[in-house]
Every structure is written in C-alpha cells, then in structure tokens.
Length: 183
Image (cartoon, rainbow, N blue to C red; front, side):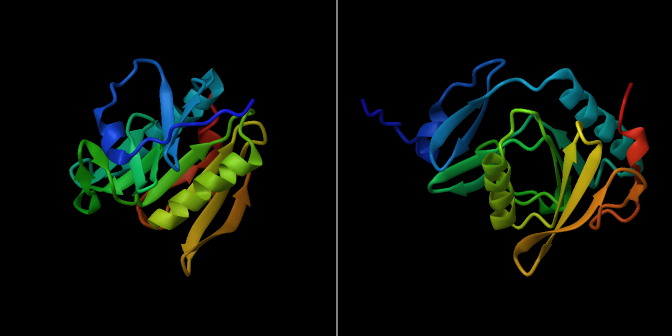
C-alpha cells in the first residue's frame, strides 16, 4: 500500500499552530518530527553557549540555541533548527517571525540516531544558505569538526579532540574544547 505525504507550502506552514514540546523541521515541504534531544546533547549546547556569550557584545551579536526557525528556502520550504547559531544582528533578515539569513556560525551536535544522509542533507542546506562556518560536534567521539565555506562548498578544515577554536567571523572568541564537556 503506497502512502503519500502532503507537502506544505511556506504560506500554509505559517498558519500552522505551534505544538508545545514538539520539534519539527521542514525538508523540501515535508514536516519532519524529531525526538527531543537527550541530556548530553543539551548539556553540550548549553555549555558551548555559556562559553560563547561572555565573549561577545550582546548589542552586536545574537546567539540562539534550538529555539528558532531558520528559513533556508521558501519553495520548496526548508526550515532548519540549528542547535546553536551566532549572528551579527546587523546581518539578520527577519520575516514572518523567522530568520531568513545565514548565521555567521552554525553548530550541530550529533545524536546517536542521526544518519549520515540526514547530516549531509542538513549541511547541504546550510551550504546553500551561505553559512560561512559550521561546527559539527560529536559527544560520543568528543570531537569538533570544523567546516568552512570555500567557493560555495563546505569543506572540512579540522577535526579536533582538544585545543582552542576561534570562529572565523568572531576572531575575539576562543573556545577551549576541553571546557565544553560537562561532567
């Protein structure tokens, strides 16, 4: 028995009610419901945000963690929810209550349930939006993969278990990888 999925348009999606406690992205018009992140995932995201926030000027820089929709494209609709994103406020394009512009840094924390194809699709979406830098964190492997946008393609430039990271768009910021892992 074949099943069909009704694809949602941007305009239809805007009228849909928010559902408390439900995490949904939209990929090529299809609503994808995701399980809530596990504790380790949340700890890594919050730890990194705690490290980043004191190092930036909150008047100029916005740091978001998993609480906003990032519109990649309106047709077919692609809306992602990065685990963490850093923006220069002057570059943010907001429309209909959502952000429609590339963050200067996106951080994705891998979960055991993530598949390689899901990861690659998400990276392609960020690449198409022009995100200049992405950190993919693996709590299981205790690694940070750093990808930079070069000639419109994301390229892995580092895979680190330790040491210091400096986001290219925020040179005043330093992250000591060891301080991200909370006990």
